[in-house]
Length: 139
Image (cartoon, rainbow, N blue to C red; front, side):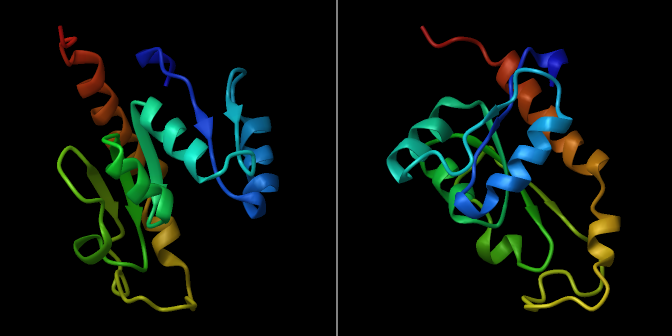
């Protein structure tokens, strides 16, 4: 992220606070952890202010797309065709395993978590950030 001069903001609900704290503790200095600290209107404003939002299939993913933020959406058991971010300028990183988009409530093997690598997600994030950096300023 530093190659783009970008910062990182973690968001989530109250149930995500401990995981977000772990992620923040393992991250470089400067990560802002807002998990459990925003209401819906504040979350919408945060998502509107960021250049790229990285999310699984969730309400905040759809909220980011709705406020015009570029989204990198990660999909495992749900379908990006059916539930992907609305609009243009978004990237989807989806698992390629047999049970992808199966909408199963439980997974017997979690092979998608090994197949869906950090490198695949980072490649999409970097491409989205590159577009933001290279976009001429409106004026």
